[in-house]
Length: 180
Image (cartoon, rainbow, N blue to C red; front, side, top):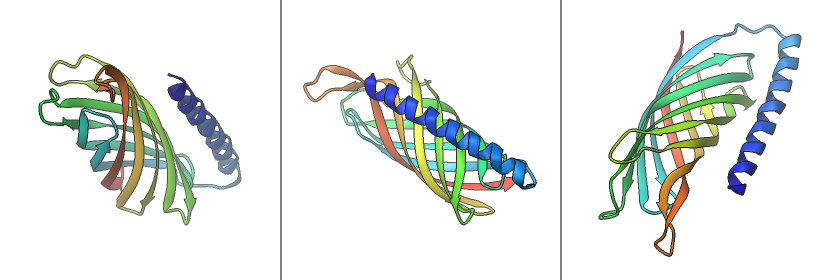
């Protein structure tokens, strides 16, 4: 639980820092603000048993505040595959809001997202806190990113075989996006 609090505090600090810088940049330059929509495919690897491969698809709505800062809203569906004989796969719908900050050549960015993951398959009834920092590259149409996602409330199996909670994944996203 302490780790989740530290990650949440770090995310909120970064969000506040980027928000302050975004407000300052907005005052000094004009930029054609607008919406973008992207559709992506995701693949990841979970770092806790019984989970292994994670595959999914998403839709992301992005609003450009300035040339360097955007806010995002992302949802989709992910399926987490488990090891053989370790139970049922876990399917969930992530809903995340975040901030995207372009840091180099208006193409390379850092992002931070927070939200919830709603389990929708098999016998899972949990909803989990979801935190996801990442890095990426985007041009006019293509968005490629790598991120770490942490799900704090989904059940896991500890090394000693006892039930646990919370796991993470390292994921890649390939998306096609366009201006609305």
